[in-house]
Image 1 (cartoon, rainbow, N blue to C red):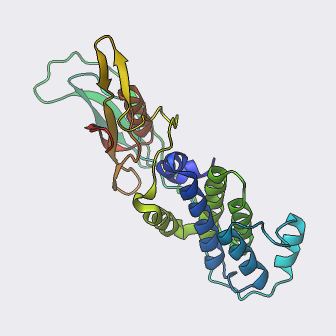
Image 2 (image 1 turned 180 degrees about the vertical axis):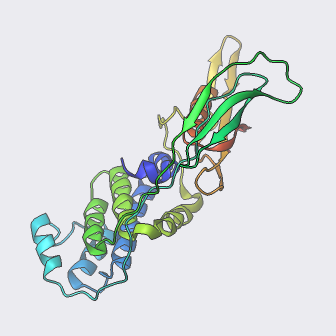
Image 3 (image 1 turned 90 degrees about the vertical axis):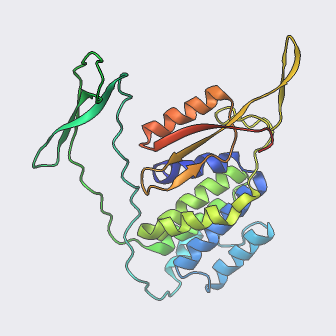
Length: 277
């Protein structure tokens, strides 16, 4: 799933959203893709977007992929500005947890950009030394050439009409992201701000075993409240502070923390919340 490379948090949050929210995100993504591609004034595209909004089946030529492509090729469009293809953000370097009393220290930085790190003692620590070296090769930024936005936008419309709302949301956002190309962060920010506080966790959602708010479990001494947790972190790509939109039990929260560490996130904290928060 290509969207994971761009915003794994968004993928997880969409998976936890209500179907109505998923469907609304799918329609929004299709609309924004067509807008940025200059297709909203094309009658047969406008008709498809109206059908999506009303929950109706897509009209021709969207009922046949080949006819849809033919219709696009035969439609005169004003050329838009050159837009480079979308490139996923560069992940931060991942350092395995250092043993107690030790920390990772940069030991060398070569002229070609290769960087080496070794374990060193924290100030005042008497921990036994462990020799381990990490070597990070120089990274070469990806660059994608100009794209044809209309050819990326139409698949977003098709995706938004998928019967399964989660698949519709994920695929429509993916195609809309590629339609926006290098400007994709604006799209993802709008998608997040649009659903705002309307996202909720369906009962028995199993992503990382998120718990049902206020759920109670049985013990030998009767019924006791299930303790809920949320995870807070600083996103590697832009330094933005994030907080999970779902609650977890403690093992699931620890697993989510490990996933975030692997993605290069920092300042990861597991926070206890009251049932229903």
